[in-house]
Each structure stands twice: as C-alpha cells, then as structure tokens.
Amino acid sequence: MDFLFALLTNSDAILHATLVAATPLLLAALGETVVERAGVINIGLEGVLLMGAFAGMIGCYFTGSPYVGVLCGTLSGLLLALLFASLTVGCNADQIVVGVSMNLLAVGLTGVLYRGIFGVTGQALTVTTFSPLPLPFLSAVPFLGAALFQHTFFVYLTLLLVPLTGFLLFHTRAGLQLQAVGEHPHAAETLGISVRWMRTAAVSIAGVLGGIAGSSLSLAYSNTFIENMSAGRGFIALAIVIFGRWKPAGVFAGALFFGAATALQFHLQALGLTVPYQFVLMLPYVLTLLVLMLAGAKIAAPAALGQPYARE
Picture 1: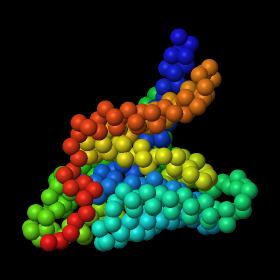
Picture 2 (picture 1 turned 135 degrees about the vertical axis):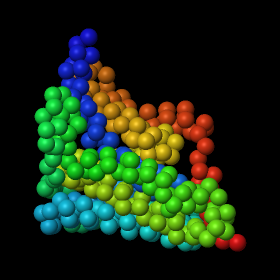
Picture 3 (picture 1 turned 90 degrees about the vertical axis):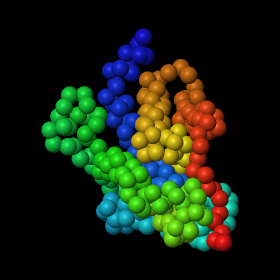
C-alpha cells in the first residue's frame, strides 16, 4: 500500500518523465515508420542515435550553443543515413548487414573520437542544455500543467510531428507514392515513380529525425555524452514501429508505453524497492521482447520491406 501511495503521489512527475523518455524514441520511430513504409528497414537506427548524441554534444561543447549542437547532430544523422542509402538503395546491399555495420561504425567512431578529444580517462563533461519552455497559462494548470506543458522544445516538436507525419503519409501524393514503393516497387516504377529516389528520400528523413533524437539525449535528456549512451533506444524504436503497425498514431502510443516503462524504472529505483535493481533496469527491454513476441507474427509489414529493388 505504501508503494502504491508513493506512485500515486508522484504521478505528475511520472507523467512528465514519461514524455521526456518517450521523446527520443518517438522521434526515431517516426523516422523509421517513414523509411519502412518505403520498403527499407534501417537496423542502423541505433548508430544514428549514438552519432547524433555525440555530434550534438561536440557542437555544443565547442560553440556554447545547444542550437549548433542540434544542427551538428542532425547533420551526422543525415550523413550516416546517406551512407546507408548509398549501399542499400544504390548498390542493393543487404539492409540488415549494412545496418549492423552502421551500428558498429557508430560505436567505434564515437568511442575513438571521444577519447581522442577528451582523453582516455573520460573526464566528466557538461554542456549547455535546452531549458524547459513553459507554455503560457497551460503550464499553470494544476497537476497537468507541470506534467505536460513544461518541457523543452524537443517534446513539443515531436508531438507536432505525429499528426504531421500521418498527414504526409496518408493524405498527400508524395506519401501515397512512398507507400506504393514499399508495397509494390515494380508497379510503382511503371507509373513513373522513382523507387530509388523515394527510398533515398525516406532514409534521409529517418536520418534527420534520428540525428535530432540523438542530440536530444545529450542536450535535453542529459547534459553530457557517455559512450553507448543510446542504450538500445534505436532497437526499441524499431519495436515501437511494429507495435504501432507502421502508423504514426500507433507509434505515438507505443512510444508512450515504453516511455512510461522507462520512467517507472527510475521511480522504482528511487523508492528503494527490495527487488534487485538489475531487474528494474531490464523492464523496458523485457517489454520490447514481449511486444515482438506477441505482435510480430500477427502484423503484416509493408510487402516489399527489406527487399532490394532491381530495375527491370
């Protein structure tokens, strides 16, 4: 009873933490939704997040501006995405193999650069972060004000992108063409749609959103960078796309679900439960596996997902 009472009294803080934790997951998952709708699966999303976090911290550290940091994180995500696209879309390389290679590249490159710039000891570095932007009037509403309307611009931007992505995918000509490429690329090509161009554009969009998501980790979620700080969020974002059935609204619900699991994990540790903390840390990842086990076999992915396209 004391445990439940403690959770209830901290429900506003848990809700606030849920949105904060869900933001990088939702940004990355929205980008992955777009690219998978085009028939490409980017397993390298984890590497994009990690590169975005590192580049964001580096940009902010040397300029003192978090806005420059976001720009650097965005560019790093775009560059990694273009490399992925050149190999998978341009050369028809295996998407899974290239994605795994991108992850290994990001881990190695960020580790080497971080130690080369700041030393092997990994001194504690802090950078200027984005301050919360309380929305006028709404932030003063009891309970919900502090939980929903006192966040950084990353949260507000991500929430706006959910309906925008849905509109672009399902209510614009470009979005419908992109989905046609992911379902029947050869038929789309006969209608004059460039499969390679559409897939490259989709991968680029995912890279940009993944880079922004990564920079939010080092410039809003925390104020520093540590090696491997993406901590599997890219893989969780892949699971969220499946959970959300490749639809932005479903992806939003999935991101909130996993964000709540992460927020609950921290609060359970703070409450000093007698359960070993390792089990609490496992919570988001266990949920990821459960989602894939329960939903993966029942949901139909885009028909051409993961299939290379060779023009006839």
